[in-house]
Length: 436
Ligand code: G6P
Image 1: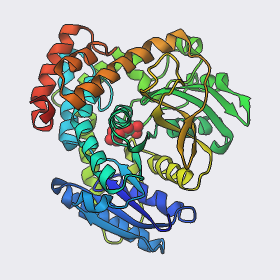
Image 2 (image 1 turned 120 degrees about the horizontal axis):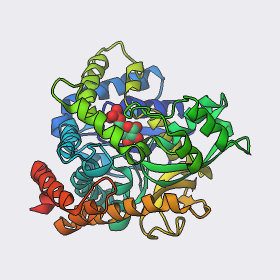
Image 3 (image 1 turned 90 degrees about the vertical axis):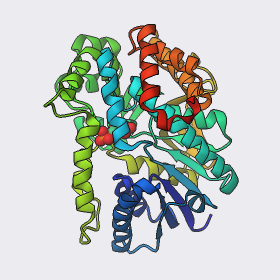
């Protein structure tokens, strides 16, 4: 693989400078020759703006990487070595609807969790399978690194329904590790977190600092006000008795399950007339400003303002994973991959987020201790939702869609699940041909 070809689907995303920076930082490990930024017609303007910035960044770094901007996905995929997916079907408008409509049923509206994440999964999975079909034809040996949300669900669909080599990725584990390092005043290289669970439902079961178990110190710090959250989730503090009883480090997204009432109130407040708007509505404003900055021909680096988005460390996670595969590093990364008996209480063929050894063959999950009952309950009900959600998305099966939501812990009743499914199919009908 001399001179790597990388295809980035959703290349017009405001996050693209992140991943370009990731390739620049790792220039000595990865002989990248071409980066193809792919988007759809509606994204052409953004692609041109962010693509020009990508070119300036690479030029400033003195690298001989050809950045190609294209609407032709097949051309970009042809003979690619790595394909990164970071697209959003329906854009931020669809996300804003996902965040708003569940609120009237007194259910959380969120980009990846609950009915909002479900709607996003239904819109996204058919597109992803289509990309994989192209990959099977044009670059069947390429690795697909999926960032597209809901990352676990989308990765499960790819692994169940295609032969493409795919790993799902999320910035939550790396973000948690960085936050933990900073609260312990330690170097992140010295921290090891035993992550396991599902995407956006991952627990840090134990934290080690230079091999010493410091889990209870991290819990003390959290209870003492240390921050462990993402830009898109309010840093609500954990109940002390609960956290000590749990004795693990929940991820920022666990707040949706363990603090549902508070977050629902907060979302309703934001969504009311005159409120600040849902997260997607806030992000639209952030994006507009970002693209204004990106237009400046004197800008040749990733601007600081991108840090207002939830995706911090995204490029570190993605490009270091690509490098670990390419260089056969045998490093430990936290990725979404097939369970294969790692969490014995979940189906073998489902996808989990867990620590894995990464080398040229891909990801081999590390063996883990049995999970305790209090964690398993939540994990199994979310997985049961995910299994049916993937089937519903692939087959356009409304019964499966109802069963998926009825088993989701954030949906209070089967009748509400039915109402929500009907509404979300109606709202998203132009993106859900499989339900016609
Ligand atoms: C976190 C999550 C991502 C998600 C992002 C949203 O980083 O891990 O999966 O897409 O937040 O951030 P945004 O700025 O778009 O709200």
